[in-house]
Length: 196
Ligand SMILES: [Cu+2]
Ligand SMILES: [Zn+2]
Image (cartoon, rainbow, N blue to C red; front, side, top):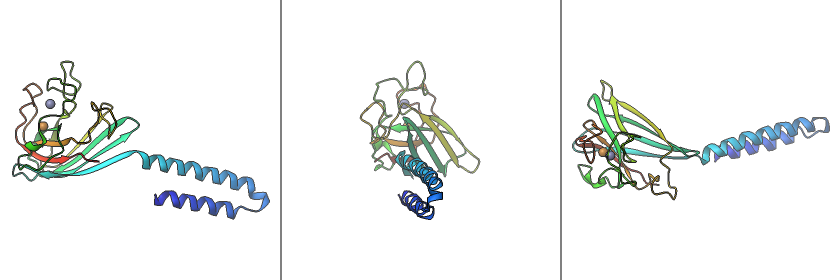
């Protein structure tokens, strides 16, 4: 909001500066330019963005930050994690935003509002809305996980899309995309609730 006020002040300042008659047209042009920039900033602020801290579970050291941004119907997730063992791990959205148990099982199973089998994201045989998949941690145990989809939303009325009230879980193991109901990905090593 600070930015918007600053732009409005700039607009007023510009109008005052160019108030003599010859400069009037110039002032109008400058003012409308400032107005356009202000509108752009407002749009940026309106884009829904929520960030959560992931906490270690199952005696792990895995923590980090996950951000969800809803930009015109496309939700982008960006997770930055540390404390992993190097190599591949699974990451899912589970059904309940409750990380209270030490093993992360308080989050329940995979978020699956459409009642499909567990699988690889967008597989023809079906997949859960929480089946994000696997990512790779580097030799230091760090990872960045990018993911984007128009099948999620942040706080909309469509319960088949709404990720609010669910949880993000990182696993010690790898999702095999075939074992039911959750890909046999092993212990839940990091957790956060998605709350608005
Ligand atoms: Cu999982
Ligand atoms: Zn699943």
